[in-house]
Image (cartoon, rainbow, N blue to C red; front, side, top):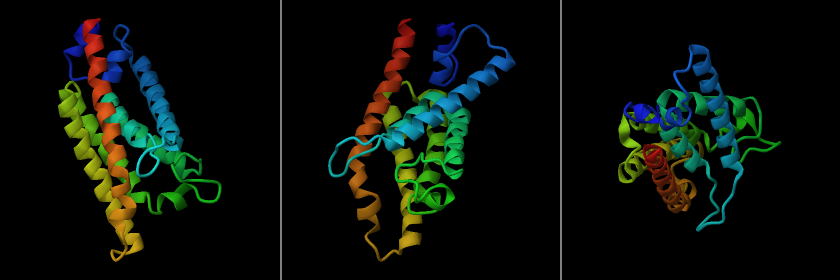
Length: 202
């Protein structure tokens, strides 16, 4: 069954969770379970801080890119929208949210453009992953790099709109995070193809 699955343009999650031909109900249960799991991983990744230069980094970009590649477009978009909906309800699931600033108030702040970028990046990576771009580390890294450009473009545009273009927008919203994002994308783009390679050997 694994070999048969690998011939199809399915996301990695489908190949990992395949036991016979699932019924429609089983497919729905799997879809919901993976979306909930992915939303939880996004929330956790936002709160994890790893010492790095020039600033500590979270694992959220790693989670966005990795889940996009592993889930594909439809499940990936459902997952990130579920995550944002949970945050909009006031739960503390964002990197800088807290008891004092949460929900829509936080989402409309300086990180609003980046959060929108997460949605587009997830769909972008997922779309091409379903078409085989997740099998090559170099190709997947290029795909993730393009998705990261989308995230930062939307993030900086919104940040500039809120703060004013006379402010050091690039110094606030881009330069400190480039090195960390490159490392996270390199890890994600190595992990996904390596998992496919493991499945092929099975």
